[in-house]
Image (tube, rainbow, N blue to C red; front, side):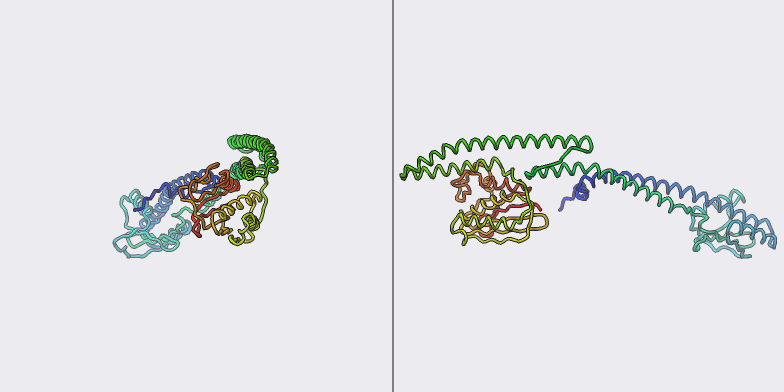
Length: 445
């Protein structure tokens, strides 16, 4: 049995943008209020006006019946009825000796009650009569003492005719209110959207220029807090980078002297020590790159197919025999604003890992409506699903057969994921269709 939650269904139906929700908050109560007021007005309007107009028509019918009952048949009565019909706008005819068929039917309850009340008050008893619609008229037939008097009364005498004007005013005022609300909300939401774009750009490592707080007081406070936070983060990153650069420089000086001394020694032990010194320099470079996070590079529009192809070629050259072990399948014309050098380095590291721990690698580039994916597959031993997130931890080496950081600093995947996330995307690991590991760089369009 499926669990249905009405509040969740309503929440899914609501607009997701702040502008839509704010407009809904303003418009919904106004529409409901107008609906209630309109219903109450129409209900009262029709009740009062219909009853009042019905009483007027009933008085006319009673007046005409009184003429019929008071004056004998002849030219005098016909002249009076003709004058009354002309002034009232009715069509009056008389059927001498006729009687109304029973049962007596009434299709206008308000008119029936009004005529009955008027007859009772003026004549002391209610005369038999019928009422029904007949096109644009109301057909009223009254049983008189010597026949049936028939009256065709225009329908407009019993129906209010200003409803369309009221609806026009109501719709017009609603549209005017909606236009004012949209204009006002658009100006209030725009600073929030600008703040969101600035925060997104800063999160991707791009420069945020010409951003100043404006709008409502709360939005200004949020914008000012963002500016303060951005300055603190930039200052912290700069200080950390400068410190690590200084440490790297200070350590590389004695390492360079060690390399020179070892180069003059020429023994087998010296060769092993030179390898250790080279590895230490490589580790220092990785530490500095991890701390810097490629933040100095500006994002520019580039063809991702060229970046992926260049990265695959560089990884193949580094492995020597990698040209025959790697297959590249990229979709041309995929252009995106990226930090080219950072993305190139990220892709190169993933391809190098695939060639290092697998016999063959496959690199592909795909794009859909909202995402670009750079996929690196290999046929190596892979990583167990429960250990894949652990592989991204900085300075951490896996202990199992597939060790992406073996012989390194433990920063390869951490740097690659930081680069992907700096572009607003992510780096995820999965099962490869080749049987090994699949590393997927996801970048939003």
